[in-house]
Image 1 (cartoon, rainbow, N blue to C red):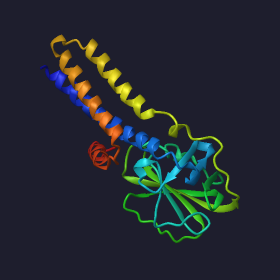
Image 2 (cartoon, rainbow, N blue to C red; image 1 turned 45 degrees about the vertical axis):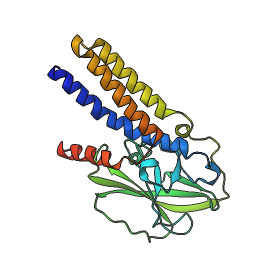
Image 3 (spheres, one colour; image 1 turned 30 degrees about the vertical axis):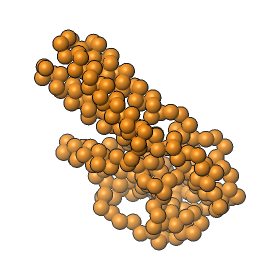
Length: 241
């Protein structure tokens, strides 16, 4: 086996870890999207956020900090990833003072917030959850790194009668997990077919099949990929990202 083949198989495995994180996320979303009538939603039309809020894990989308309050009862804190896990807060840094945020919360109503400011703090920063009727949206900063946190602060404005989102978020209806698995498999097979070292093509095919099976298991039995992400973060920090 050529050294170049070893490097390619290693690269395929590393890439598959990123695919696994996303497969876990979309698989869990598909499984948990049945009780939508009882699910709160975060809506920020300016940056394309229309996403359900979970109390399970930030690995499954926008996460409501359990130690914080519900809308209308005090300080609300929501976390979300900027990369991977559906990237719900990818464009969070584009929000400006005065922009509108809505929480559609069953049993409470549609609560409107107005952005006040944004701050960047160390990852070790601890936020008080007793700051009145305000909303905090928190994500990692800068993009692709977990060194710091970007915090958007918004003030509660009005509460309207509850109205469920008219359009079901696309991410919760489409089989993205299966599409990702199929894309990885197709990419691996194409690479194997055109790989110039003919005697190692079978090895690449076997590696593709094995890793694809690994992703299928991640789809059938989704679990938060915290260990995988921790290693990714260590690599990023090592590279100074």
